[in-house]
Length: 518
Image (tube, rainbow, N blue to C red):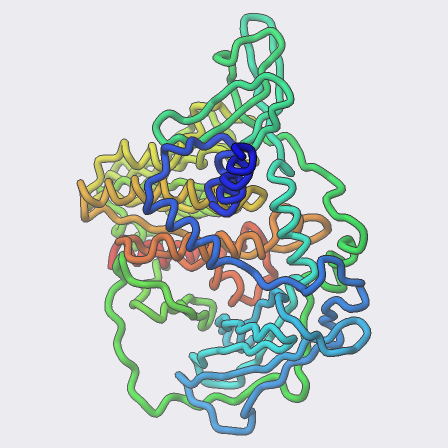
């Protein structure tokens, strides 16, 4: 009787999103009722449609080279501001229409001559047909481009890998005392096959573990570093769903003409107000025109001279927290503004922390990599602070600006751990805004990247997309601003890259500064 009840409780717990976290060392008592409920809603929100069977023969998987899309009502006269709809029918490698959805597509409209581009929204009918909706935002010949990032069968494999291998990236720490040194494996979800050192953060409750060194105490840990990647994650037919040049980030061609001619709008432009935190993020959040990002929600400024950047940042303290995709902002600012001098703290460019100063204009910029998990060169454990803790230590005020991004290094972990990290960060953001409401806080979204070879298994855009959906929902209604790097990297004509080229970074920084100096 007791055993049956125990199994029943275990089954009930399995349905809770916190069950996965408890397995990874999070403490049950640290979740409020609201946080538990929110996590359940978020996990439901990102559920993805599956193929009807777990194993699908490659021949029956999605084939981008046979698939075509058609522009609906392509003969009508389109004006700026109109909606454009595209219908796509997915075929398999046998040339048959697929009967189910779940393919991961990306789409944009663009005019190469104008260096103009914007993203589309994909609607999965879950029967092999997809609608893609665009808002036409500039006049001229506007082309449609669609690509298959992953077939539904590939997405199913990615989901399996995420569930079964929460430790598919592992880390190392070195422990030192006098003349002896040992290195052991560390992780968030670390199997207890040997004694562990528990490095759970006391303030946030964020867990972290290393295997205990054989002779040295846990307190002798000196650093954190990337360890490596688990191999051979795919089984059987799955390998074929990740074939570069066949079904990963492959273009889908139009059936008939792949463009429309757009006339200028007959209506006068509505003027947009300045960019303020708390403005909801809609899609499309903006578009490129002549290589400059134009926001659809507020009047973006373009900081085309070092003097304009300096005027904006004068007497300000800027804190940049996150990964290498936001470290690019720090690097761009010290490159573009000669008066901003990087103060040498003796840390490598890849790891940080970094400090830049403009003494004459009283500008100070700090960059910190976010707390573990993070794939990084060896770095002192003290130099990897949790964002939530750093925010709690900042006074804030009208001259304090905070930029945050956190996503890429959570791609190899259960989504549940990302939700928990964001809950902690959001609590600290709310506390900071409560004590200093005029602090400017800007969140950079995830961005897309190239997916050669095995990159999909660790850092696919599909993983990033799921985390990005979670982040956007969790910060809805909070007085923060967003730089939509997701749309800014899909809409641009340059090839996708984890670290986008300078023209994209400049546009991201312009959007950021538009919130700082509206």
